[in-house]
Length: 132
Image (cartoon, rainbow, N blue to C red; front, top):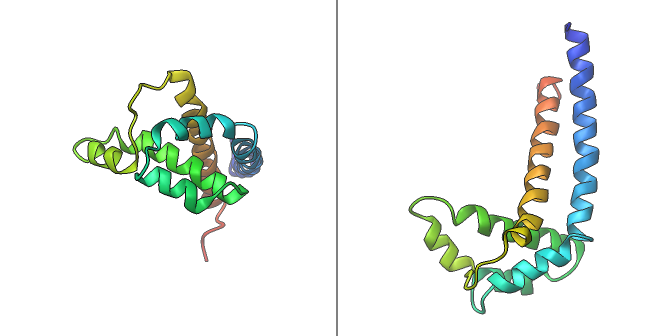
């Protein structure tokens, strides 16, 4: 492949990743949100961070997006060595084990979204969008 073909491929990959990422974000705050709200209801114990953020952000589009991000962060940060249990105890509690299928409704779409956004910014960097 020559340089021109790589630049074309990077431009297509960047545009496609942005388009699919926006669609996925829209799906996470609309169709998939009922599963996220179910997970949040089960892990956001009263007086913990997730419970407070549910009240602060509300149920609008931006609030739903923030709530999805906080629930995702709960699952990611609690697996960190040494500090994970402290973060988990501040954010919420998983008193009863959640089914894996319910957790995946939050983890998979947000992870795919994060990978797509990384690809979008990486393709922009490759194309020189961030250089002066």
